[in-house]
Image (cartoon, rainbow, N blue to C red; front, top):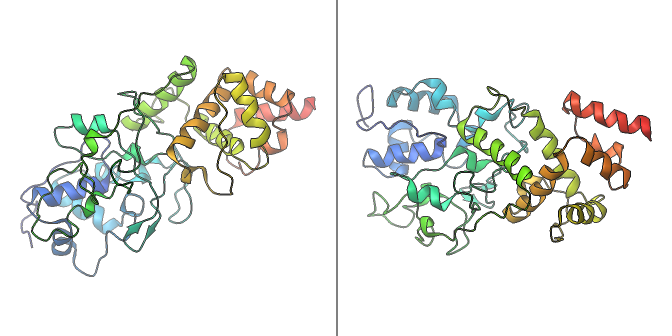
Length: 333
């Protein structure tokens, strides 16, 4: 085992870095394979990679990494998705869907979902490539820095991003050629296609982009931005893809925004499990709908594409300013 108060190499997390990304970099910096490092330092009785450690990080893991890298404990915890509690979602719970958090859908050690996105330009520009915490957020479908669409899978083979498996089937490989390589086919994710974001409505994308910047910087709640607005955007996304409302609401919104009509996948499953292209499409409509508040919502109600009874459906934590507007619609009905 590596002895001493600190590990020989003890890199601190980069800005907005995910815990899993940080842990893999620590292992490589110490010249060890990820699995070997974890067994030596944490013991064979503790399983790390059969869970979503970014969401379900055990206390002993965070405390050990904090101590062995000389990183403040609060900073170490902020590499996890717990840092979004009270901001993107209300209360943390270990099971079930968290609002805005993309699920990995881990089955044994395999990932059936595409819960980690990436910006190829960010990876290419990094002195040392790393994976961001904000790339686990469903709201984050494009990079606000480079204005390109994010990707959630390897363009070469279509597999999800699982960087801790880069050594899989390569017993002699200690350090992979690139942390930004596909674990399955070796494709360089930095060279992935770079699709520019089509900003079809400037105010809509300005508001959306501002929220993404705040998420990336981790300062939501300590600025003038009212993050309860994101809860309403999420509610609008749920309404837009709902089986009951989609047939009327999507055509109405696409006509108003001059966007092409695109049917959404039918089924009762969380917004966070939808494909990135569909999420981006729906989010654009939701951000437009919340713009010029509350006139656009009132207009959609007048056209009978939404009703006040669905505006509060499954939305127990709705902010007061939203509830007040819905109650006005009730009184005017």
